[in-house]
Image (cartoon, rainbow, N blue to C red; front, side, top):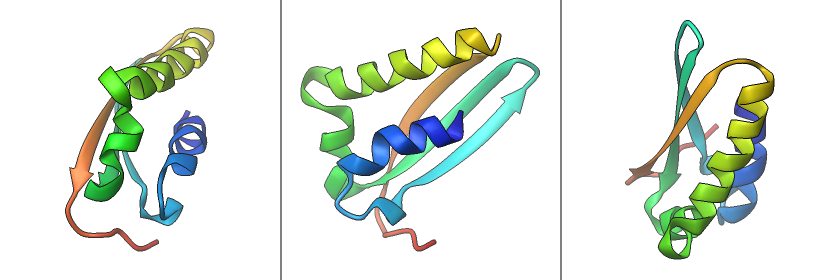
Length: 83
């Protein structure tokens, strides 16, 4: 699931390596937090939230197939993350 989120968000970033995804799992509930640089947060959210809604819908389809509940939160990072 994390690989799908990474595949969908990385092309939107000016530096794809700056994306950091945290995962918290409790039974069949999975919460992903995408830490995105401040400069790229608008691209990930999109106009009126359309981009992040689309990303969430695509992930929801995969989650249904895997019988899990997934939530995605986008969080702003102030300093770049190096991997």
